[in-house]
Image 1 (cartoon, helix red, strand yellow):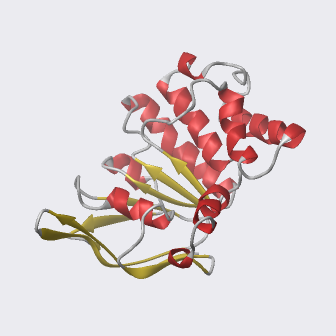
Image 2 (image 1 turned 60 degrees about the horizontal axis):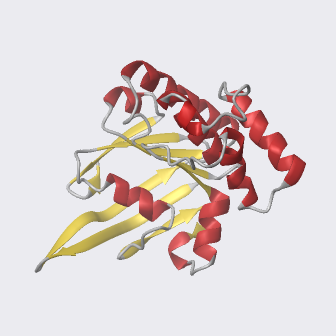
Length: 220
């Protein structure tokens, strides 16, 4: 379970303090999906960065299966992100010098899974997203929707506990976007990952188990 208690994050801008998140409370059961909506600047991406340990809260706690993320120090925080978190970005963030299978396999190699086992798991997950025949393709030869499928496979191949998605359909056309959320949700459930996504797309949000809104620094 993901448990957030009294989470706050503030930033200084000039001579004033901006409160982006204020005493946020949140509980998400293992394997469930939650969509976070809200206007631009409402703190959605900040929340994701806090959940995965990239950013530090000013106060409050974040626990994933009993592990308090804020208490981790480097290099434990980096190892936590590598092993326990998968991230799907709006702009795919694939490595152009690696082929499709190598992009996915990289997430395993960072977790010391190499050789035949890494290749087998990468190929299996790519087959599950409909790209089993594109393993050796260059990523820049793929369509936007195909690149996002590679990114989804890469985010899940190391079997993370937490899957985060930041506007995962923001760079896709409407038809392709409609295929992505069911795929992310189905694969997250299959792999036992808790899914948290942020989006402006109400149709995308509606496909999650729960929809929450960030407004005035709080979850509504």
